[in-house]
Length: 86
Image (cartoon, rainbow, N blue to C red):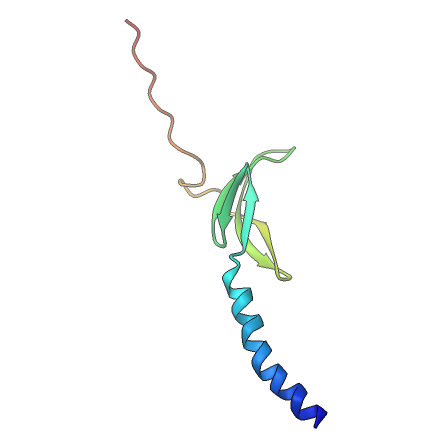
């Protein structure tokens, strides 16, 4: 009887646990902002700034360096022209 009770409990609880995990979005943080998985950011490091993508590593959101440099969007907004004096 104990095995049936355990099996029934698992059948009820496992889907609930899986649903609870899906509700929490995994995000990476950098430069005071939050990025979704797949997001790209320019991260300032002591040596030089690096572009990285937000990925899951060992079930933890983490930054992975991009080898081919930054896409234009991750490099930041374009410089705004200065207002003319006068």
